[in-house]
Every structure is written in structure tokens, then in C-alpha cells.
Image: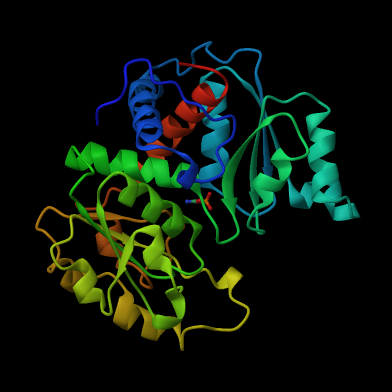
Length: 312
Ligand code: CP
């Protein structure tokens, strides 16, 4: 994509992909592509963020996001600290805002936060001076995942504009789906969604998605097929009869992929429930770019930390 020469990242925080312009997203992807090379060196470290402090504040489990933010910060020479709900004084009844204000009193430059409640990162920006990066807030958004998914598609397809992206599964409770719908449609892709009717939220079209009534309709001619996990942790009552039935009607299999373009790629944000939303042979097969998503997660988070802490 074309960018104004000298376009600077104008955001102190990253709360939602809705806040980023096409130029901002293009800048993050360009910087991430440049920084990716650092992770291929024998000494994977540059001094760019020396003296900066990043705190990862995670109130929900994470493998990829927490670790890749930590690796990203360390590869840029920032100091990183991890704090989780289980080991923090939140266990003793300290409120979220009090926790954040106490962390802020130790002068971090960035707080990366994951929380089960939508809007938590936004709330923190009202109480602390540090930059806040949303690492997943409830069913709302996961913007750095959206950016790494955009980077991965651009790497494999050479562009995003004009592609058809099919996102399959629990659209209602997936913060990844919401960030991807916003990000891919903003960058000019056609985004289709499909899943059980109980897992398609009313009004999702307003984010830029076309709702398809069947898996086949969503995948037909698609360039990208993305499977999502059923987010049982966000469902008070079961919204599907059984995982076996879900797998039968919405699990991505070789038969499903026959309807997509012959060079269509398969994505999944992880963690995968193998054999439920995605056939294991596809997850590990030649069309899968799932490990590239993970690799690009480090590059995108390096770019975000760099740009948010004043790089240009
Ligand atoms: N994709 C993702 O957010 O994975 P984690 O929950 O492991 O961070």
C-alpha cells in the first residue's frame, strides 16, 4: 500500500484496530517486515529500546501473546516484567485500577494487558500515564493478533486488497474475529463469516463482514480460510449441541478446502482444538501458515513497541 512519506504512528495506545487508519496499519506491517530479520540472526538483539520498561499484565491464560510480547521487548533491549492474576495481589482483593496505578508508580513505558472484561485496556488509559496495549479484552478485540494475521496474509499473497477471507466458527465470542474483520475489511479484503447461528452476533455486518449461511458458501473461492476455537470460557450456557456436531458441520476438512481457491491458505490464531474446528492433517499440512502467524507475532509486537515508544 502507498503511504505518505514520513507517516508517523500517531497513537499512544493500541486498544482497537478501529482506531488505526489504513496508513497506520501499513506502517506497522512495513516496520514489522523490516524488524523480522532480527529474529533470524545468531545474536537476536538490537539496542533500540534500551532503558524502556514493558510490563505484561495478564489476567487470562496465554502462550503465544504473552511470550511474543516478552520476546519482542527483549529483542529490542527493553526490560520486561510479567505479572499474572494468579501471582498478583489481585488474588487478595486489590482492584484492577489499583493494580494498574501501583504498576504505573514504578514508571513503566508500556503496559500490555489481557483481561476477561471488554474495555479493560481503555479503562486503564484513564488512570495511568504509560502506553497501554490491548492483548485481548473479553470478546471485544485482539488488535495485535489482527495485525499479525494481516502481515501473514500479505507475506503469502503479496497483497490484502481484493482477497476473500473466510472466518469460520465462534464469531460472537472471538476477539480475534472482531479485530480480523475490522483489519481485513479496512485493508480492502472481502470478509465472510460462517458458524452456528447461535455464534454469529447480530449486526456483525456493520464491522464489514458478509454473513454466510453455510460453511460451503463462506469458503467457496476463498483465498484465506481461518478456523476459530469455540470460546467455551465466554459462554454461560452451551450454545452448540456438542463439539462432535460442530466438527461435522463447521470443522475445516480437506473436503471443505476443495471449495476454496487451489492456493488458499489455512490460518488459526491458536490454541487449536485438533479435530474440532480444524482437521489435524490440514493444521500441519502444506497450506497451513499457522506457524508463520506465530513467527510474525514477534515481528508485529516488536514493531508496535517500537512505534508506540516513539520510533519513526
Ligand atoms: N492467539 C492467541 O491469543 O494465543 P494465546 O491465547 O496463546 O496468547
